[in-house]
Length: 162
Image (cartoon, rainbow, N blue to C red; front, side, top):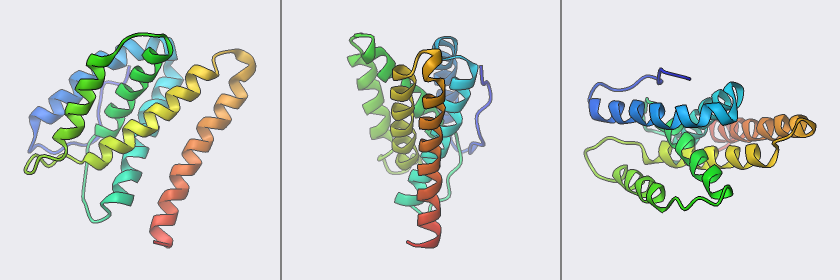
């Protein structure tokens, strides 16, 4: 399991602690069924998704942290549970509360990174649950690569055109 987060500000040790706790809880639950490669892809691509969202929605912001990754992991867990028919309203409430926290002035939490990681993690989870046999491994890789290419394209579009 990934046990380290990206850089984090020391101004919010609570935020860092919460991210690490969330990674510990959900990472342990997701890594086994997804496998190490899918889990690492989920974590890193969700971080990229969070960063791209910040670049698009708040381009003058300076952010650091693993919140995009964390929200991607939780979103993936949510999607996978829903596909299994699990009633996960409590998790939805926790996600909404954490999203709302990003809008509270003074907390210095990037809601943009949360939303970007959330959307990216959900999309990746949909890919992973639809492509679960050996014959579909190539299409799964292609779809994940398409997500990465879309994120890179959005980044380049923002840098060079917008």
